[in-house]
Image (cartoon, rainbow, N blue to C red; front, side, top):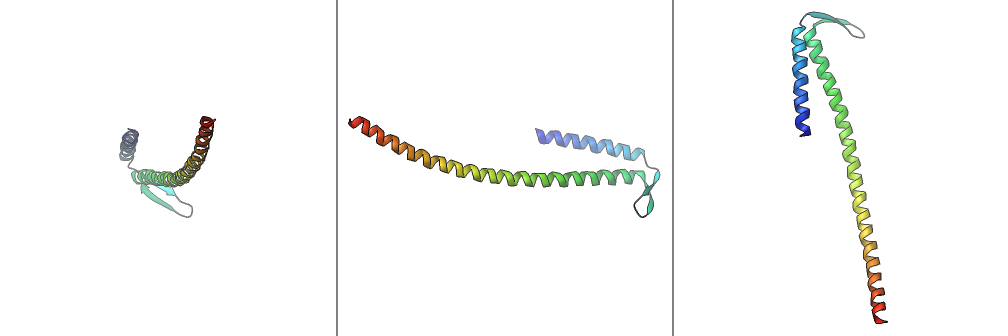
Length: 106
């Protein structure tokens, strides 16, 4: 359900940007650091939106990779702790059984 919400919001955002871009078709002067150029505003809007999406997606993927790595480490640690707990539980269980046998014998 969460994925569908993101898709719907992304499509709505794309529709708004496309409508805004189509309305603004006049040429504008774009000043870069070392030069200037004249481009249609629709192109400036679409390229800016695309670059913003790519940068945001790149950061999202970087964050996702970090989260997956951390999850893998925690799962391994969890398995080790479960194994230690099982060993100590088995050891204490056998001691309890011996004590129970001793109590029954008396």
